[in-house]
Length: 278
Ligand SMILES: [Zn+2]
Image (tube, rainbow, N blue to C red; front, top):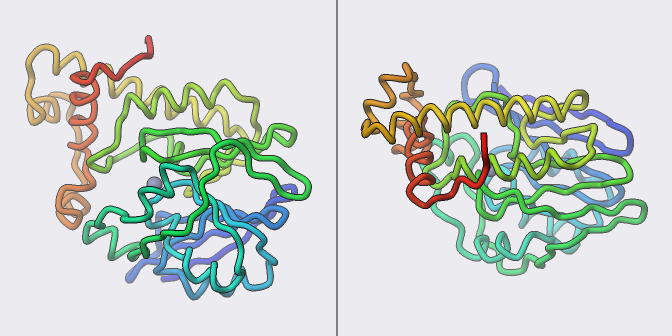
């Protein structure tokens, strides 16, 4: 089943896309258009719909928040259609020259993306005729991920920093401690709308992000206590009565799993990543 919807929030148009071979999709991708700027390009499984929805927008520039395939899946086709500049953080530009291989489930759900050699690095601000967006690094979920913040309007385009107040699985390379620090730094900002790439929160956005912070901090502290007692990953999993998403873990060949969340805490403890205090 294919889902496409649009919504307006002040000067922003949000486009929501979802596709599952069978049944109603539960996970959606959003791209945002404001004053000539398109934020992210969605995934390639929805290419036809994204091209159709964007064809009359008059896109003048595109910004990519991070290299994941559900954000960078249609760069090529939109570049051809609009002949516009496409910006990303310096780190994202470098990763996109040779992006990491996708697991089967990522390929199945969201499809592949082409490597990109011509993205333009931008790390401070991106401006449109009427707005100015500060580019803020928010690593953790992806090392190159950034948020766009329009201070005067209090809009925060948060890429995948939020997604949900509860998170069921991590990619292999995610850092929970770095995510916690990124959320804390974003919570210092004044914003009213959390324009998440998967689950936008147009009211109470800040509270939703606080809820996610509490969830991650609790998870971190529960796993650290057990890990410091000498428990293995499997023991921690059982002691915390966690449930694995077996199909996702299997189809992603272990690239997406709840076990990865435990491993992330242990890795962060080993690397002395946590700089936060509970
Ligand atoms: Zn992502």
